[in-house]
Each structure stands twice: as C-alpha cells, then as structure tokens.
Amino acid sequence: MRLSIRNRLTALYGGLFLLAGLALLVINYALVNSSLPDAAGFVATQPFSTSVPYPAGATGADAPAGAGPALARPPHAIRAATEIVVSDYRSTTLSTLLVGSAIALLVAAALAVFFGWVMASRTLRPLHTITSTARKLEAGRLDRRINLDGPGDELKELADTFDGMLDRLGESFDSQKRFVANASHELRTPLAVQRTLIEVALADPEAGPELRKLGEHLLLTNERSERMIEGLLVLARSDRGLACRSPVRLDEVVATVVETTAAQATEAGVTVETRLPARTVAGDPVLLERLVTNLVANALTYNFHGGWVHVEIGGDPALTVRNSGPVVPADAAAAIFEPFRRLDGERTGDSRNAGLGLSIVRSVAAAHDGEATARPGARGGLIVDVRLPPHGDSTRS
Image 1 (cartoon, rainbow, N blue to C red):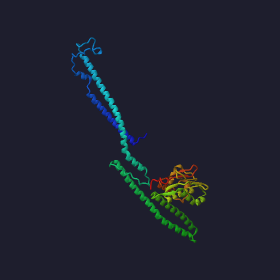
Image 2: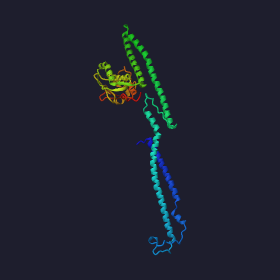
Image 3: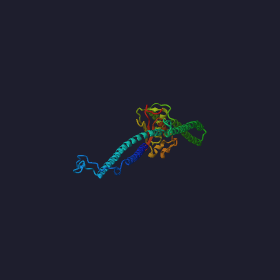
C-alpha cells in the first residue's frame, strides 16, 4: 500500500513524539527511582531504641501472648517492619508513576498524531494547489496560474517558479502559433497564383497531352497543398482558443454538413444515416461546422463502396460518427488525431488529404472545453465520439 506524503509526515510526527515521550518517561523514572529511599539502606541509617514498648492492650498480631506495657519491641522487629513499609512505598510509587506516565503518553501520542495530520495538511496545501493547476494545463491552455499567497518560504518560491515557467511556455506556444498562422496565410497567395497559371496553361488549345498530364498532376498537388494550408490556419485558430461563445444548434450544423456532403457520399457509394435530436452547445459555429465536416468527410473517404456512415447526436457524447471501412488496429486509433498521421493500409491510399482532418477535430473540441476520442468499430471502420459541454456549462470564455 502506497502512503501519501501527508500520511508519512503524520506518522513521522507521531513517531518522533512517541520516542521523545518514551525518553522523557525513562528519564523521569530514573530520577524518581534514584530519589526514593532504598529500604535496606534507609533502615541501616536509622537509630532504633530498644525500649520502645508495645501499645497498652495490644493483642493478637500486634504483640506476643502476655505482652503488656512493660514489654519492649525487639530492635530486629522494628527494622523488619520499617523495611517492609519503605519497600512497599517505593514499589507503589514507581508503579503509580509508570501507569500514569504510560496513560499520559498514549493520550499525548494520539493528540500528536491528530495535530500532526492537521499540520501536514496545512503544510502540503500549496502543493495540492500546484498539482491541481498542473493537471488542468494543456498545450493550448497555459493561462492558469497558482498565484500562491503567504510567507516567502520554499513553497512560495516553488509556486512562483512554476508560474514563471508557465509564462515562458505560454509565450513560446503563442509565438509558435502566430508563426504557423502567418506562414500559412503567406503561402496561400503563391499557391493561388500557381493554380491560376496552371489552369491558364491547360486552357491553351495548343497544349499537348504531356503538358496536360503534367498540368493535371500539378493541379492535384496544388489542391492538396491548399487544403493543408487551410487546415493549418484552422488548427492555429482553434489552438488559440475561443474569443467568444454563442449558442449553437449542433443538430442544425450536422444537418447542413450532411446535406453539403451528399454529392460526395453518392460518388463514394456510401449511405449516410442520421439521428439528430435538438442539442444546443456554446461555441463558435464556424469551427463547429469544420469539426463536423471533417468527421463526415473522413468517414466517407475511408470507407467501402456500398458502406455506411451513422451520425448521431446525444447527451454524452454530444456527437458520434460511425462508419464502415477497413479494420483499424486498437492501439493505433488514438494516434490518428496527431497532425499528418495516417494509418497503414487503405487509410493511407488517398494522397489528396493532408492528414490534418482529425487533428482539427481534436483541437476544435478542446477549444470548446470538450474532447474527441476514437475507437475501432466491431467489424471495421472507426467510431469517433466528441464530448461538448451544453450551453451554459462552459468553463472558459
């Protein structure tokens, strides 16, 4: 069984107090023992008169038969009686001291454990704050700080160091996101120019077959690059979080996306079925539409001719997209959310996609205080669940 630091500190406090109490008890016992008179020594140092009479009328055990006032006690009897009394007094005193000290030590040890528990809890409270803050941090959510109040001790220094580290990490991530967004934006113009030049060249009636073949290949490559740049822009935007939120009817967004992708579904020979009860979430309608579009497009692209796609809105998860298709290894399902990550086999066969679709899904879900998870279907394909907080339950603005 693993003990927490608080339990260990409590045990340490209680154990140290118990050892100190035992040492105090031994010292006290030794001092009292040395201060009490020894029976034999005490009797040896006392003068006893040989003319001490028995009390008048003493009978039985108090005096021998026929004893009277004229009879005196023998000195050896007086010494023996005194030695017994002193010995009993010494034994009784030491026993009382041991019992009383043991009871007091147990009570004090119990109080020491209790107060040790309280002290350990108060001492470790800043560490719990640091741990709680660290658990809530993500690459896209570095805005939380500990801001620990209190004396300038080691824990305050640790919390301030942690906050300073978060400041530096936040600046680094923001700089990286700005670079991606700016670079993606700057690349869109030359790609558009290239596409225009290629289309003009293909429109030339004197263009030969080889030139047309090369032009079509360049157009496909250019189109894929444009989709990748557009995906990077959306990814950078969603990673920066949401500036504002508004109520969004998720069922209406899904219905619009399904209608928009109907031609793609017909071309792929895939049947799309939906179950769309009313559901309102708080977020950005443009980003949510991109999330749903990427999920549906991914389910249509990596599917069989004659396959199916089920899109369902629920409570938790808010959105579930299931599709038939090739078997997805269980250990590789979570990896498909990484940028530019594709699985082996047929899921890598379509070179038109940049590998950012599900990365954008995860990023948009995280920006809405939700999450996206994936798992393999029982008979192949993929099941993607998206959890989104309902309108009014969002924790970040």
